[in-house]
Length: 256
Image 1 (tube, helix red, strand yellow):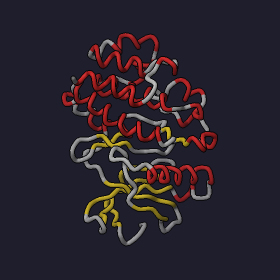
Image 2 (cartoon, helix red, strand yellow):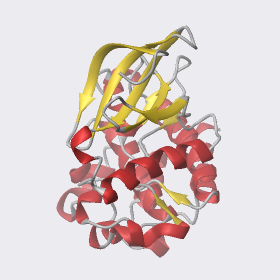
Image 3 (tube, rainbow, N blue to C red):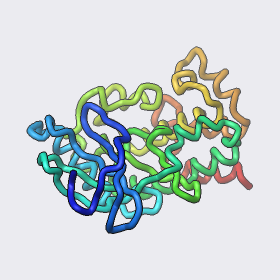
Image 4 (cartoon, rainbow, N blue to C red):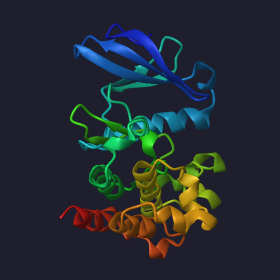
């Protein structure tokens, strides 16, 4: 498919933009995952550049809480691809299938791990813009690893990513829904707050952000986690935590 290093095992996911497959990686004597742009989009300059930017961002963000790029290249059809490690434990979205394992302390622990990665991401001038359970993988030690920077924005290229389709309903904050280019670090914190709510309650994200159900939804959380989630998901930017480190300090207090 892409080189003699990788041997296709099975299809994992296909979207309108890309295809993700599981491969045997001869170089690592293990499994890897390859994400490739769909061949029919190679001539679409905007989509192609967005895909290449995702790989560029991942390569630049050297952090244990961010999925690394193992290899890059082009498929036989001329589509750009990059390879990542395979995470057999899946994502936090998969973990929702075992709700009894998602105690408040476990959820807070995942939140702290994601915040450590986000602190690095934001210091590097990158905004993820799509934090949600499905974009947080779990390694063999059950540690959270952030992935899917497909709609991330860079401080130097905020104006290149446009379109309301870049917002995930329920997780995206008001400013990002209004204009994806206005997303900033506190926008990622909002999405993480929603993610923590979903993990801790098993309820839909929209229940937290809908004014009519917000108060009752917050009441489903423990008092401490409820305070953190409330502040992280305030509609007003100025009312939220000022940074990932600030939110991490608040969450850490819940474990002491």
